[in-house]
Amino acid sequence: MLDVLYLAHDVADPAIRRRTLTLEAGGAKVTVAGFRRGADTPSANGVIELGITRDGKFAQRIAAVGKAAMVLGGKLRGVGRPGIIIARNLEMLALANRANAIFGGDIPIVYECLDIHRLLLRKDFAGRALRAAEQYLGRNVSLLVTSSPAFIENYFRPISQLKAPTLLLENMVIDLGDGTAIKPVLPRPPEPGAPWKIGWFGALRCQKSLKLLAEFSRAMDGKFEIVLRGRPAYSEFDDFDGFVKNEPFMTFHGPYKNPEDLAAIYHEVHFSWGIDFFEEGLNSSWLLPNRLYEGCRYGAVPIAMRGTETARFLSAKHIGLFLDRAESAVLARLLADMTPARYLAEFDRVAGTGSESWVFDKTDCQRLVNRLTALRANDAHSAMLQEPSQTQSNKGGLL
Image (cartoon, rainbow, N blue to C red; front, side):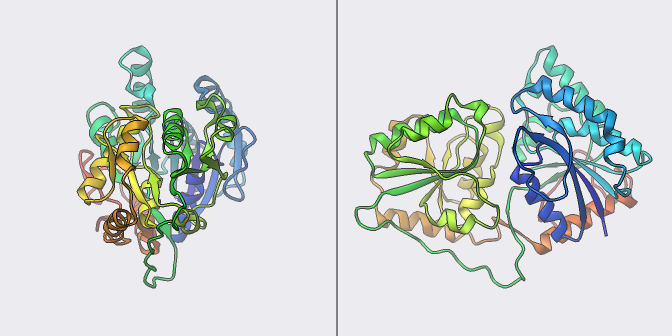
């Protein structure tokens, strides 16, 4: 069995729980250690807490990492020697090197980077210094894991100095069923007189999306409702709760469990908001968000911003609706003539892609763990791995 030490930047992030479930379903034993953001509750049991960090407070997080590095040996005293160490985000890569030294210095390190922070892309001294830090901290990385081809094309290949083989691991929906056929989802047009519903689920961090959807729903005078679920990044909003409370056609229903609640919450909506203007033109243009896979898996017609990686991904599959400009009037024109017949046609195209494009099943989990297990017995540049300039797919035969 592969023993994994998973170092998490935010132990309450649902993505940490999903990755833990994925690894455990593949046969690994996972120990999670990491930081807690404020009063948030860890998303997994038995977490080793390394301290508290604040969302959006970069300097404070650096200080917390430095403090954690000094006490890490004591925190890990009861942990057995892991087979690999996974570091989620750059700040945890520093602790991965420290943990590796504690356990003898020869444990493969996997760097999991699913967002490219805007500071890494700056051309000034701060940006160069942070990229130099990434290069230094990543000198012992055996495998880079990222979730979108655009991250590789726009950052890791042309800008980052990190030298490691790359594994593309998309944000697919985890399905840990018994291998039986996945039940198809059914269309759910609204009853006569009832509104169409757009679901914006997951990490809610985009003030621009919130205002755009509010303006749109008011302009449509109740013909469309906006349903919000997930974890708001309160540091990115002026007053998220107050704003939503004052919107007549917008509701927030709090967090949800992924994957357990996905079928139910997506069945309540007709469309999935796949747009994110957070770090507009950079990370938000390159990512393939969780909600993209979740919504399509459960038959919600995705809405994407033209010119983004999400739109390119959906266009290749001939599905989805595309917004040309980030304006409520443009969104109104896109959806104003929505009818049950048009909705059914869009739904059928999404459903016709099948579940394989959206689901990461137990067999995929086992392949992933097998791929990580191979790191223990092979040097990062051995024949078992491809050259650093090459990329392996999350469902490819080389996993």
